[in-house]
Length: 134
Image (cartoon, rainbow, N blue to C red; front, side, top):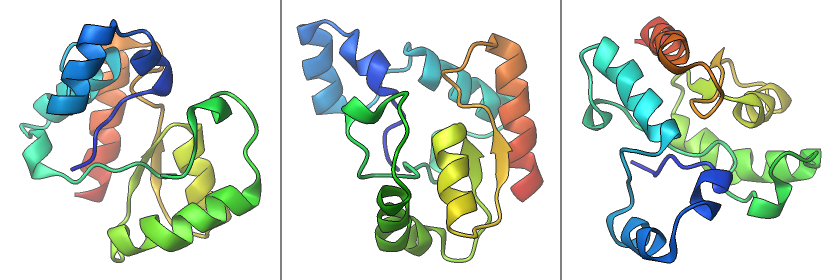
């Protein structure tokens, strides 16, 4: 299972906390993690019950909030994501993940990224998206 951090969230961590993240790989109090965990709780699941990965593993932090060239998405999807999916339908959380699926003709169920504002409402939306692919 891969980590689920937004680059902006990582940049806001203190040096000591960032060192902890690099060792442990997961911080439950980061909003992204909190709302994804809540979505799984709604379904009676934990992170051990699902596989989580980045849609585009080659995106550097500098691309956050900017337009990413099609070739970057295609390369990432062709080299990593398509193999990880193994024919399963992914839940694409956020615009980047959904764009990667769209540009690569991968059927998906979409929802807002857990870092997007919305709290409990966002967690329920993500839970509903996950439930659609179970």
